[in-house]
Image 1: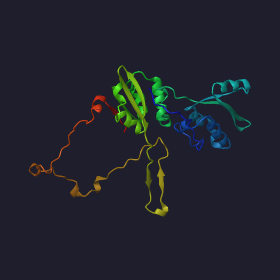
Image 2: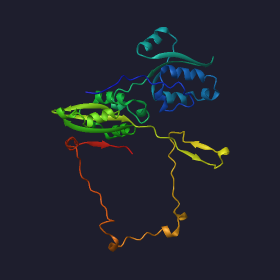
Image 3: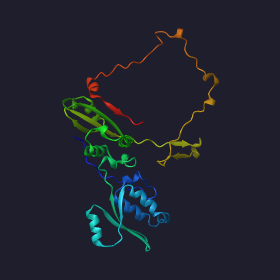
Image 4: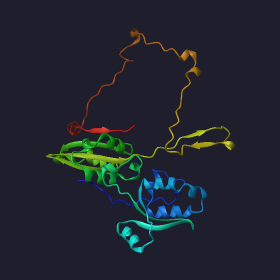
Length: 279
């Protein structure tokens, strides 16, 4: 049994055709696609690179080129859920396209490009439609895709203990997790999912002058993160060598240790909880 919410259609009308990527294209709908192309018909660069931009849209949309301007052909596409419109650059270059957003129905539809553009409720819906054996029944590649966009944790408990007041299930739901319950005989595996927060873009300052400060945003999603390196040569020489403490100096007062005292909640021990954290 899955807890799901009504999924609202995504839309990002602020995107322009030159700014759209194979990831952000999942934030728009069919009408947005035609709007973006209409706005770019006077752009010479777009006109010369139609195939390039079209390939980006094809990562998230089915796009059919209608060769014959016949009303019956258009109607047949519309009955199948397509939006149909004409894009005209000039009299010698115009297209009639039928466009439909690719659905995300199965776990095999999930990609690194679209995983962050669905809600946790939508993910639970997809998992519920494909599940049988629980989280471990998914291939490692699908798990990796999901974990790149969501915090996932699972627990398996007897049916009559899963919804115990004050237990893990209640706490996870209160923390904003969506839940999928997979029955396994007298036991139930609960899979909790929550969208990871967006990481802030890295900014670097190239000038200390406040009036002439330049900042560079990592706007290209494919760029690698900047690596901060430590120059050890700048350290004071007296800090480079640290002597091991003398055994005679260790006393009961300055010695400490850390012990794993185990879980204080018997439900946690029975739960066989598995936490997956994607660093």
